[in-house]
Image (cartoon, rainbow, N blue to C red):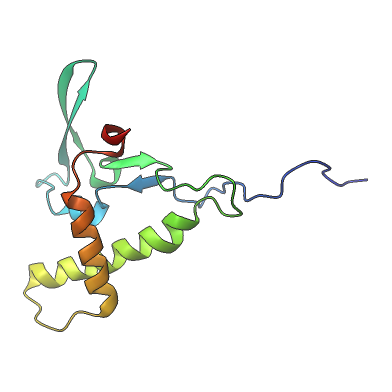
Length: 129
């Protein structure tokens, strides 16, 4: 009694799990923000082009883009790969923008290279479906 027979013990989403997976990193979008702290997001919807002002957090993401269904922690890729990658790339960008000439760490070089490579890919995840 009291057991959950037949219930999967896979990870269930918690309130702390990241759900907004940015294909354009928030730290990078922030550099394009105006004095109001917002970026201009342009989308084509239903045959019409629409421009809206949004915060970097609310732009350039797809919900659960890096989610891995069927594993213990479905947000593992976002939490353990993409988020640390973005943090390292953000440090690299700050070094570039501030003129900091100190040597980059291996993590910063890797992160900047991977994020730069991703940035060269065209479109959004929806465009490639």
